[in-house]
Length: 209
Image 1 (cartoon, one colour):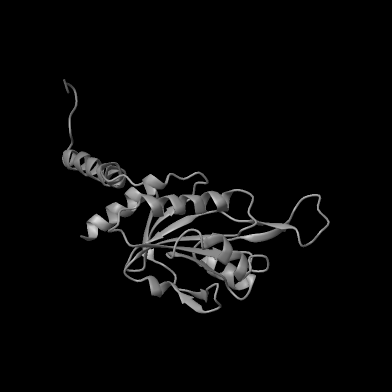
Image 2: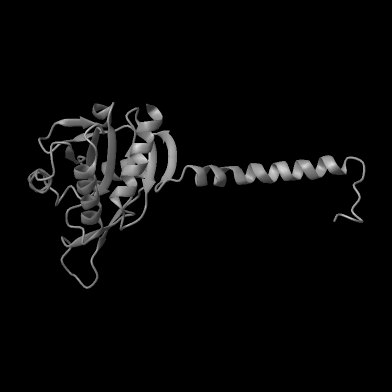
């Protein structure tokens, strides 16, 4: 079968070494196949922050220690994406098992129009574990979003003279933070499946246990 193939001195070792290195390159893909995840794995400390609740009180990420957190940067006047992502959070909350402690944080990128009253009316229907947060300025929110690699900017709508009518260009990422404050998953898609996200979180909870 291998007639005519000869290895020089050290040649066999070289072949074995090349094969071994090839398997090392394939190892991450193999591990991903053996332990598939719906989201993009991050595994790094979640940037800490303290913002304002709809009651005007300081609200910190550290307050949710011991619970999973779904974090989203959005705004109420968003045409579609933000409402889709909030819908994913709502469905996940209603489908999660009782033994899965999870909170949902919505950080507005539009503090001028997303007033405390607007945010309160929008989120009070979802449950006590939904928290709408705001910063004192757009720049402060942008600085935080940049730390999560989710930059955004305010852009005037096309063919509109009213400077008050604008949209926010943003990536629409959804993040999962574990009970130890570690950023575990990022979900970049616009149309997400809450059941798949729930599987990722349940897998993290099971690994911890």
